[in-house]
Amino acid sequence: MTRHRRHVLVVGNGMAGARLAEEIRHRDPDAERFAVTVVGEEPHAAYNRVLLSTVVAGGISPRDTRLKPDGWWAARHIDVLAGSRVAAVDADARTATLDTDGTERVVTWDELVLATGSTSFVPPTEGLYAGSPGPATPLADGVVAFRTVDDCGRIVEAAESASTAVVLGGGLLGLEAARGLLARGVDVTVVHPQDFPMDRQLDADGGAVLSRVVRGLGARLVLGRLVVGRHAPVDGVSAHVVLDDGTILAADLVVVATGVRPRTDLAVATGLDVDRGIVVDDRLATSFPHLHAIGECAQHRGEVPGLVQPGWDQARVLADVLTGADPDATYEGTSVLTRLKAPDIDLASMGTVDVDVHDPGHEVLAFTDPTRGRYAKLVLRQDRLVGAILLGVGDAAGALTQLYDTGSVVPRDRLSLMLGRAITRSGATEAVNLAEMPGAAVICRCNTVTKSAIVGAFRAGAETVGAVAEATRATTGCGSCKGAVDGLCSWLRSSEPAPTPTASPISSTPEPVPAAAALTEGAA
Ligand SMILES: Cc1cc2nc3c(=O)[nH]c(=O)nc-3n(C[C@H](O)[C@H](O)[C@H](O)COP(=O)(O)OP(=O)(O)OC[C@H]3O[C@@H](n4cnc5c(N)ncnc54)[C@H](O)[C@@H]3O)c2cc1C
Image 1 (cartoon, rainbow, N blue to C red):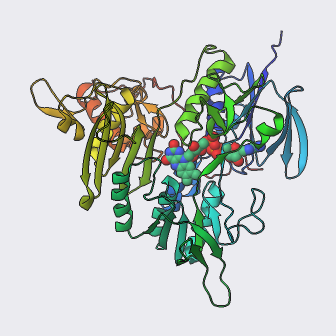
Image 2: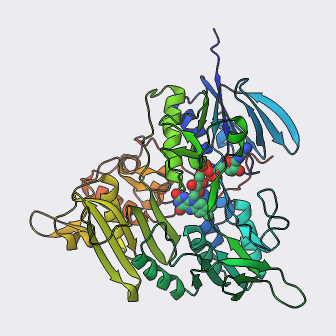
Image 3: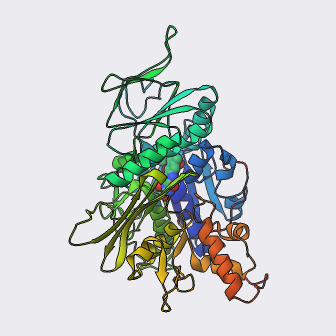
């Protein structure tokens, strides 16, 4: 008797949607129980959006960002429709209307997952749009938002002829864009409306140190100001922007990095509950049966994630629920860490940081060294690290991040803690103990690779950072975990018998990505 295969239709071939398809196949490898279709508006195979800043900086090409090699999806019976948009959903009939270059067709589904991500928010400032401001209006020539691989291509192309650029927004993306443009020889000014950059992740003291670091790299930073107009070149006057105090800044290129908005248009049209994002419960269910949402479009317990890790955690839980691998699985939230990906700015921010040093409910440790661009703030509650800002503190950042991730009790000697070192019984200091770190500790944040996965890969023969990267994808995101992976490999080499190359990895993390491959698969 042939069993009915349930059809999961995933709307959005971004980081969460692609990961969900992969997670479902992991639980149904022969596609016996589930047909999976991923529909993506972008005309590309799924790629790692996190790496786009590195593309702007010239470290890698767009081809290197592709999540899987050609043929990977088809070989796993995952139907990828790139260059197609889901234009409408009928929740009662369980159908969706797909629009591919103006040609519509209707498909049926059993479970539908919205993974529509976000779009860049571009303020309705004079001169930024090619027409009257609105989501459907293209941006003016010389103005680029920073969200997709195509945006990235536009920035890189414009940087070839631009000698000046103004970046709107001094958040994570704005600073990464600025760093990339500086590396391409462009004279860059970042305009940010608050008193210090990355104000959502830093406090005023940390922000002041970061400002100094950014300026030291050669970027101009204009704080507490807004751009009120942008003017294209005309009659011998170069392109420029005007600030709210009348200042004029030359701007052959304007990069907009003023935040994102969850893409909820389809959910609204379908009649789902939508607040800031599509409202979901702990099982990632929306307000309609058989309709789910994950990633940046979803609002869970009031939070809309702006980072990739929550979307990937949600994909894992939803795959468990949909396939029945763990029908009771729930998503409880993700403790996120923000890391600035610029080779010469080592900055991480995690948890609760906006706490005064004298707050009675917390213990706050702070270290400020503006001259050398260093700042550390640790927020403790009940002897556990619940938040930190770590700027320019090198090796200590890795150890402190592990303490935060694992919720371990911190060393009693707070000075040693600031240095990322623990006191042993003998009184000597040592790096936070790799042996005692739990297997579930996340070493690579971008790819959610745990210590267990790395140990498994090592035992299967991956003894170097490069080999671990190939086996688990650890270090292939922002690359900031390279030191930790190297440390783990050294520790394993010294504490384990020689690995048996034939042993199979115990990792359940997704498969490796080739270093360079064309970003073409699935193109319409
Ligand atoms: C330059 C840059 C750097 C970043 N750096 C980091 C970082 O260091 N760390 C981090 O954690 N996060 C980072 N992020 C954020 C991270 O990329 C996002 O959190 C992540 O991509 C969200 O995944 P998602 O699948 O929810 O959305 P997306 O990756 O945006 O995917 C959504 C997809 O759905 C498609 N879509 C939307 N509507 C439809 C429709 N109706 N039909 C078909 N397709 C549709 C969209 O075209 C898009 O391709 C960065 C983002 C950018 C832009």
